[in-house]
Each structure stands twice: as C-alpha cells, then as structure tokens.
Length: 340
Image (cartoon, rainbow, N blue to C red):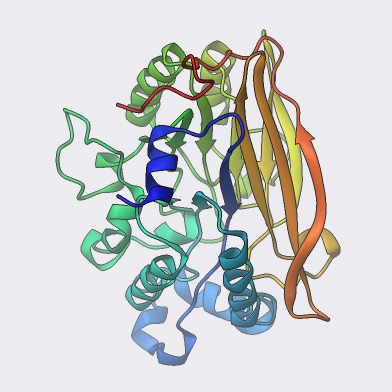
C-alpha cells in the first residue's frame, strides 16, 4: 500500500482533509461502429436525439480537458454518479471501463449506474459487469456473495477513514420516452441497515445516487419513482451529503430533517459544452475535515472554459452541516479511527 492509499484508508489528520471529486453523466458513446441491429428498440430514438443535438453537446474534447485537470487536482477519491454510457451498447461499457481506468484505481473511484446505463435490457456480462470492481462494497453482503447483477451490489458501502460512501442504484430499463429511476424495496431495506450502521460509527455519510431525491427538480418522466420512501428514511437516519447527476445542470437543494437540512448537490454532464451556463461541464472537489465540534467541509467548483479548452476554478464555498450533525469520533491525536 502506498503512502497516499494509507492516508485514505486510515483517515486524514485535522491538517489533511480527505478530498472527494464528484462528477456525473459523461455519456460515452461509440457511434462510429453502430449497426442497424443495434438500433432496434429504444436505442433508435436515443440515436436520433444524439444526431439532432446531443452529439454536439457531449464532446470528447471536454472529457479530455477534464481528465487533464483531474490529474492536476489529485483528489483522494472520485465519485461518478451514473450515465457513463449513452445508448447502453456493449462497446460503450468497454470504452467506459477504459475511461475509468484512466481516472484511477477501483479503490479510489466509486461508480453508481444511471438510467442510460440500463437503457435496454441486455446481458449483465455485456454491460455493467465491466465496472464491477468500481461498484462493489469493501466487503460483500452475507446474503449476496456473487456480484452478477446490480441487485447483488447495491446499496454499496465503501469506508475511507471518516468517510462513508453509500452507493444507491436507481438504474432500471424504462419505457420509450421515459427516464425514470427506482430504488426498490429490497435495496431500501438494505440501505436502512447501512445508514443505521454508519450512524453508529459516526462517519461522514455521502449518499451517491443518479436521480435527484429532492422534489421538483426534474419532470415526471425523469423522476425517481420511490423518492418519497428514500426521503422518509433519510429523515429518520440522516446523512451529511447527497450527490447526484441526471438533471444535467448545476443544482443545490436540501432535504429537511428534524436535526437540520441535508445538502443535495447536483452537477451537469462532465462532457457538456453547455447550451446555457448552468449546463456547462463542471465537477466539484469536496475537502472533508473532521473537527472537534463537527465537520469542516469546503468545496471547489471547477468549470469548463470553451475559449481556453480547459477547466478553471469557478468558486469555492463552505458547505453547511445539518444542525446537530454527528460529531466525528477522533483519536487522541485528532485523527479518524482506523477503518475496519
């Protein structure tokens, strides 16, 4: 284990926060090799939308600029909240795998799928199986030992020092012209167990989800169908931060709980030139530091500059914790306890 990996796994000191980069919706495509057979079903309409406007919006040059910027930023951890592919073609999953390998190792990069990653129903081994090691928990659940379906993987839990990254899958094939997502009763039940466990451990809980759980953000045809169930659970157990994609624009919302508001942060597509400024490619870098009286969390927004063909700093702000947020359990040296 390298020095950097040790710092992430065992927790930061108060002088060295964990840095977490959040990005979403790269919409990686393979349009050059597409065949008529590939366009059977819902993919035909996705292909036409790409040709009409999305192909001009999602650019590989923006992705390349992002990767160069990320190498300079050197975050400890990276979270990708879905829609890695565009049409759910087998070649796109392989291409996305290569892209993930360029971002970092599976222990550093955490992935959850989006609705485009479940665009149509095809074999697991042709699709998200390519990303298994980027999605699975630190340890498999006792009831699901085989990672051969998203139901066997999510909700996922990865603990890095004082940080608990909780992955929730909302990826489900949906009908034509729909982009809805759902969590499902089984995943919600296991999520309740994870939230209860990480609450007791006094960890900084980051929930990763593709569809935004806050109401009124997207249209009915793009909604999270069981968002109310998730909100009810979070109202009871809480969380420190929720990160999502899907809406393709910059969003800051919150979910109210009896102990305060949970920040809900959404980012645009990381490959988007941006038809409007709020839709231009951005990613966030969170600096999460445990303190004696709570959590000190700041975030930097990095935005794509079309003129310079690079990412630049847009802003830097402090993130307010929910009132009465769980105080991190520190050792006598001011560090997070070693992860089990």
